[in-house]
Image: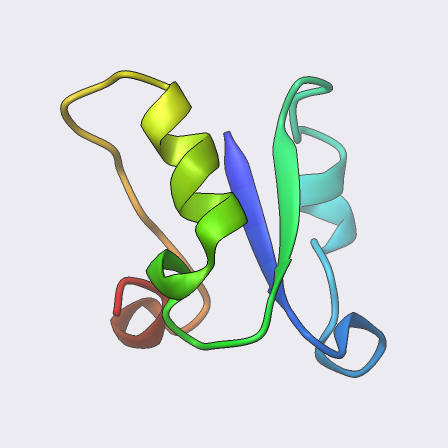
Length: 67
């Protein structure tokens, strides 16, 4: 599982408490500078390492999160 957070995280927030409680210990967290996270090399690199053919994406503003 991978979660992204917009910079500045202190202003934009992190996972809500209810999601923090179930976020896997091995989950990855990244801060991003852009709405569309696929422009961030560290995030795209992490996803490529998964070696999967499909992923599910969700977000608070999904239309922006999947950009």
